[in-house]
Image 1 (spheres, rainbow, N blue to C red):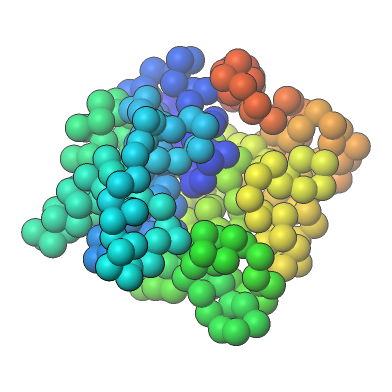
Image 2 (image 1 turned 90 degrees about the horizontal axis):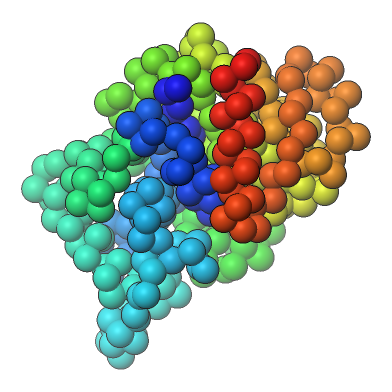
Length: 310
């Protein structure tokens, strides 16, 4: 079964880790959010691309949910002596990824090409694609003006009142090579349990992506990152509320209205079943909180079994 996933953040990483033992990696394509990308210390940082590659390569720090396992931070400590900002944690070995990507981009490679080189070096057998090779940057409007996403999420710890969200550059961006084709050729499209506003929203903002999701003959499913009226992790709940969406699986369904076929939502939210059906979406109750490796694999199996019979 050919699966094309839309991904960003730690929720996506957990589900992708669950898919590793139950899906042929050659059958998986992951389209990754790059709205979080930033320049730190002169280096091009692609947090979500790296999290996906580290996860599928089996080298991610599973405790943190980002970065490399067994990481050290000597460079971070040293660069602080020079007065550089150190609110964004970059590990010593993780820096090698950013150095390599930055060099490739300065040599004229596209982000897609740089990602392919990095994924191959990490032993990733799945296809990992940035949503676009053109820069699209998520911006958060707070009381004191606009913030880059990493400034909002990491530096300010997502505690700023959100008045608006924008995807700078999206209007003139194009889908990266292979992105639209991967959606069209898939047997199923899976939206990971990522933040609908700042992880999936930037992907959908790239012209042509929503049309591809509407036009594909594949079943399109999503996993809700909202359980019991709040996000499993991160600021998704607050961001959805700021966008006028209910902080529930119903809000996720509204965010993906017009192209979503199935929504996996948590067992404890079964009371939402009628509302989801009224939106024309097939609701599938499941254990969506991935608190262990076994839970990750169990959810991945449940999703694949459901999609194979859809």
